[in-house]
Length: 99
Length: 135
Image 1 (cartoon, each protein chain N blue to C red):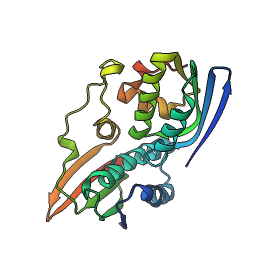
Image 2: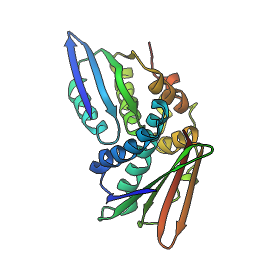
Image 3: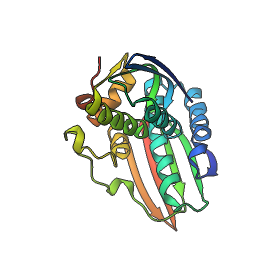
Image 4: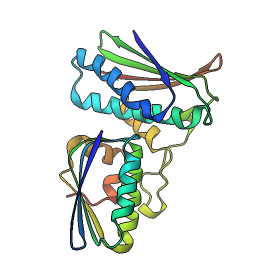
């Protein structure tokens, strides 16, 4: 299960992810980001309440990062130890901006 | 040993995860280990759902066993789809720059890094992937 809370202010979009970003929930996030990202120059993903992320979720983060590289910035905030370990193992901590 | 058989459909992942987590919780599995096992389950189950049966109907059997001394969990995922050894895929280059980064193979790579043992077997028309993790 995954809840996606979006908050758009001007061209800054904050997306809070609550639950599990896995093979069953990742397609929904991908669809929501695809709809929401045009015109956004600053994307913040709040992962404070994200329990875990699988490779299906990593794929969505990677494509979001590629989109934001063209039109602005993307950063991840409140990343917990479990999710951080997954980023470390996969080398994602080097290519994502984690605060 | 406990066993569950479900259709190899992505939508069944929560059923399988709940089945495994119930047994892990009964055995006081630390939450970090449980999450690693949940991610491993996601990677293996979704691979089978996507590739094993080429879009045709098929089933996945999940067996879970708790071993003692040292205490560990062993989970076997079996399907009767086409022969496929995910461990034969070469590891992705995790040092590549973003733009060149392929996403395939990352899930299996995560498995190898987080589990104590990952083993594949093809026997009698059945693929079995076994994972083992200390509790």
